[in-house]
Each structure stands twice: as structure tokens, then as C-alpha cells.
Amino acid sequence: MIAAIPGFFYVKKFYNRLLAVTGLLLVAGFGYLGKRVTDPDFGAAFGSKAAKAKIVLQQMDTGFALCATLCKVSPRFMQAIVFPEVMRYSAIKDGIETESLRTLYVQFGEAYANFSIGLFQMKPTFAETVETKAKQLLSDSIYNELQLAYPATAAEDIRMERVERLQDKDYQLVYLTAFVALCNNIYQHHAFAGETEKLQWYATVYNAGFDKPDNYIANKIQQENFYLQQGMPEKKFRYAAVAGWYFNGR
Image (cartoon, rainbow, N blue to C red; front, side, top):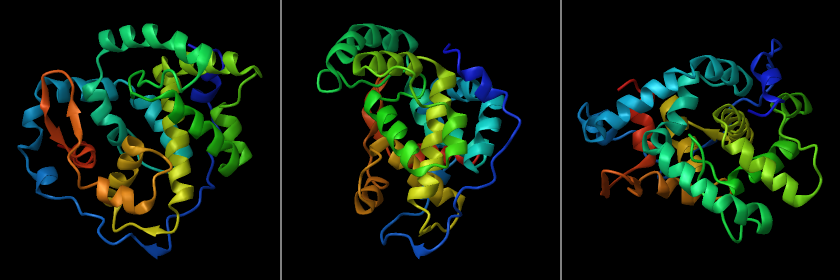
């Protein structure tokens, strides 16, 4: 674990300044939580994968509770965003892919290897985007608290440390915290009907990409393109629906 992290998880000073979610109406066509989310049988297809993912997230309750204070959402809201990825995650597969691809990424960059890594299945490009936008958009106090800056200056050294961060679940939680705080800023003028709609939007942005336009995200919410690679690769689900299923206590 990277040495800088303990200071983050034992922080006592909480920040109360993130921009409120106010303003304009949400993009037309943004779907409400449909039958596949509210249906109590929706999660039956996940089997033991869902149960194991819930246990993993519950074991991180303390970290989620602390981080949720920084980005002004509930711990369950944060957990729901990554629940589909945690359910799909395979430690063995992740280890093999990481070792085979990290050298290419560290030496040559994202054009040669941009792979999902770690418990929350974050890509190096996602982490880099979060780092850049956090520096631009978040307050100095929150940015410094998250400790996203690098002591190194050489690109290769930074890429190596980025991969090391993404292999650590606590640092992935730091990136998730920054992601949610950034969404609060970027989508501050969206008038979400409630926390479930807001969760669906954030979860879809997490899955689809940070810089996608609003109409793309609104359409993506309704698309079934998320699948569990092991066990049922032929069956696809809506990422937002899976996240919503967890968020609403199923």
C-alpha cells in the first residue's frame, strides 16, 4: 500500500463545500428506474457473485463512510456505482492481466495498454482523467486531501506509480471519491428527480467514460451492454440497472 494513503483514511477534518445539485432539467429521455431494477428477481441471475460482492463492499464500510463525507453522498451511493464491477471482478484474472500489461503501459503509455485493473476495474486512462480534472475543478483542500499529485516528474515513473495505486483497493477508493466529487461539480446544473436517478447517471458515466456528452449518457443508461465475463458472457444487463438494484437495497 502506498505510504501516503493512511493520512487520507484517518482524516478528522471534513469538508462542507461541494457545489449543490441544482438548476436545469435533466436531459430529455433520461430513464427512471424501470421494472428490471425494481423486480425482486432481478438479482437472481447474479447468484453467488452478488452475495460475494456485497460482502466485499461491506468489509470496506469504514473507508466508504469516510470518503462519502468528502464527496457529499451516502456510502451506499458510492458502493452502488462500483457494485457491478466488484461483482464481475476476478482476482486471479486481474493478476494475470496486470502483470502482462503493466510493463507495456509503464514503458509506452495508454496507446499500447489501457486495461481494467483492481477491485473497481479502473483503467489507467480513467485514473489520469480523474487526476487532471481534480486538479482543475476541485478545491485545493479536497485535492490535497485526496493526495492525487505525484512526487515524480518523469512520465514513465508516474505511469508506474499510477498502476501501483490502481492495484490497491484503498487508492481505488480515493479515485472513486474524486470521481463522485467531480460529477457533483460537472453535473451541478442537472435537476435529478431523486437519488436513484442521480445514481444511475453517475454509474453510467463511470462505466461509459468521463468525457461523454449528456445525450450519450442518457442513451447509455437504457442500453444493455454490461455482462459478467465469467459464467454468463452471453447475457447483458444495463449497468445503471445493476447499480440501482444494489442502491435500493436488493
